[in-house]
Length: 275
Image (tube, rainbow, N blue to C red; front, side, top):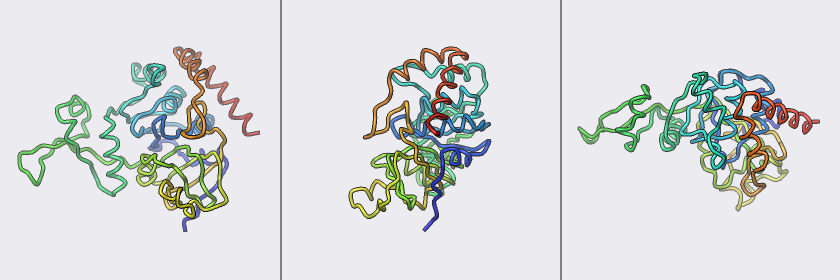
């Protein structure tokens, strides 16, 4: 069986090198916010972020902190709280390279990498502006039906996947329930880094009710136990999002100075939690 490292949060974050292509999940799928703050504190640079299929606060913080060179996404939004201000500012200033996509395209490209395929195909994006602005996307002929066109685009093969989950076991198996996009990310990435609320001494595969929702240790590289590791976002079945904190962030992050003030407070909170 593959040996999975159970590490500290900082050691887990240290496994993300400068320039890495990093896959992260949508806000509803278990976002490793504590690990994101640890990456920012460490000073990682030049990340190529792939959102599966969208992102919110996680991508917003990494972009605002100047840690992102390229963002490949279907959307960056804070949902009911409105646009992500630091992302919007970065796109307007041209300080981040934006690879625009759609949710189905992101999912299909990740699934292609999962299966070891060089590209994915979709029909629904034909005729859209994306086929014009994404120079790496092509229109090809269906080999089984001459004259039938279809869109083709490269597989997305992340260097690393990063997410937060309710729990894992000491063998390195991680329970994600019905969040199947996390399974796909782990299959597609060369390494998978996971923070969890708790680590169980019992094997998850010994429990029939948990086994089907568990990612085997074969696809996991490192785990760190971090209580409330998705805060201030929610973690399904564990805790709700901290609405007051998120609202305060949106109000502050309209300016660079406000963003930096909130980020410094959150980094200080992370340091205190580690003591």
